[in-house]
Image (cartoon, rainbow, N blue to C red; front, top):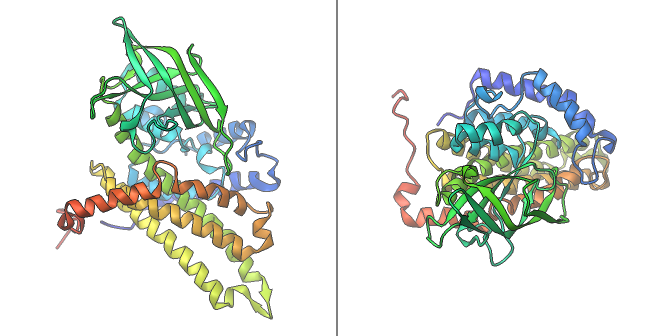
Length: 406
């Protein structure tokens, strides 16, 4: 694979980076534009999104027919990284989780009628969305086959859902939801995906779960279904295709997390570097001390490894592969790189880094979830190990480009 990006993508990356620097990072100053949960206020976000649209930078991951830029997954890697050099970046471009993954799967598998009803409002930025899969024990988490929320046929035109989900990102503000429910006990075809609106009778938000870090809009909620009725035309794909929906959605969603995390990791170092170049100890700049250089080098290498693995996985997705092991490798590496960079930034900036005078403590709290969300790192290491054990020869095979010269 080629590691270089094309000039058009780089020009777009530069435009996004300039927008983030000039329009978004200034909003972080003084915390005046933060809500009670550490995210950008909705009023500030609405104004900012208008500027993004006017600049022609809105939703580059979406097809042009939906108001996006229709870019490949590979092209998104440097763009998403540039967006998340601000803590408020991705949501401004309509590229934040969970909307990003929901729009992607709806654009790929929803019917034209479903897209008009459920996707277009999210793509336009008029509503927010959530993906309801994870459940309290003994229900499904990283393993969707354990899901216990149940949907049962009622007559010939609808379904009734009962069950409970939790840690559903964005549920507190979401209008449109995708829910994965059990429709049979079949091991592979027992799950089905449905679309519903937050105003549907029988749906209830039990609580917004307090968490360690800053939160996405709408938080991470526990929700309940009590005889909630859903029409059959709100079923996503066929009965029994719920596991397939999760596979289509979660792989790319995990990879876009990696792209965003790498941007945050770079931001952490971008705060630390000017400080160590200016700050002195014992008559020497911190930047001239070997141990400081070693810390910076370790974080920089971790970010670069995450970048390369993310780029490789993106290219595999663009070729039509599920890229399971490639995505798992990227997710483990990017999550670790983010936490290392955040910790390094705080350590090098000392008390200033630990204070709220910079976004470093925000990034540090946010970073800890990266090794948990969309599958814990241990789960992804298991995916990698199984691929190695199943076929060591294939695992180490070099990808071959038949169009390459030579």
